[in-house]
Image (cartoon, rainbow, N blue to C red):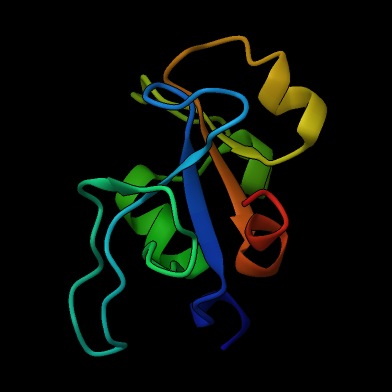
Length: 105
């Protein structure tokens, strides 16, 4: 049950500035297919993902589960302020809890 709890948001670094993060998707209901398209600047409107949703979409990521991320042009990184500011790749995606994302608004 722990990996299926919808409590994460994804932040794009490709289309956002350091001061104005953008979050993935549009919020869906639990029984609907997760939204992985589009962006919003309001984390309350962004899609909420479970760890299962994320790994199903992107595969295992070394920063999340200790596995290498094969065939991914995108790296999924745990959000930290310093990593966000000094991101190495413009297409990195950051994962954070909704509660932490609210502090970025």
